[in-house]
Amino acid sequence: MRIVLQRVNEASVDVVDPATGEADPTFEKQSIGAGYVLLVGVCDDDGREDVDWLARKIANLRVFEDADGRMNDSIAQHGGSILSISQFTLYGSVRHGNRPSFVAAGEPEHARRVWNAFNDALRAQGLEVKEGRFGAHMRVRLLNDGPVTLTIDTRE
Image 1 (tube, rainbow, N blue to C red):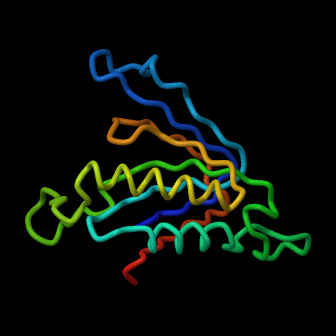
Image 2: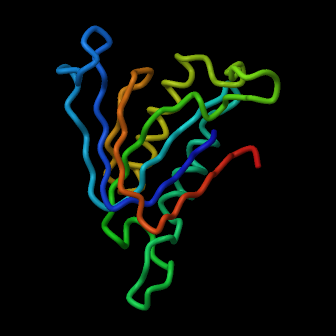
Image 3: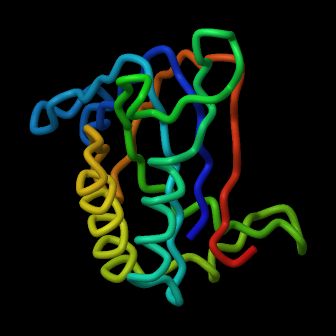
């Protein structure tokens, strides 16, 4: 699994209705205050071990400032939330040519199951998790804090 984690002051996601180009009325806009936006990519080799390791890592990551202004607090200590967005393009390759190849991205049904399991594992860590819609055209808005942006890959 590949994650781009951004510490944010606030973030939201809505889904675009392909027929109108406007916000999809069947999806309720999801918003968080301070916390993380997680862009989540899944490959076919990802499974329960990756999900559990990432959920623990993200829950315990100390990138929020403590009372002394040092990055020393976890998201739970800070009282933050997570906005999780599935993003197969994290497995895009531009090594050859100018059009990205996405052959390394997980098959959609597998990726959906792993992404859902990951979100549930984060919740099991006691975190509030809001989600985009898997496979949809989404508009993600965020106010990056710091900026703090990390990439996490279970294969590295």
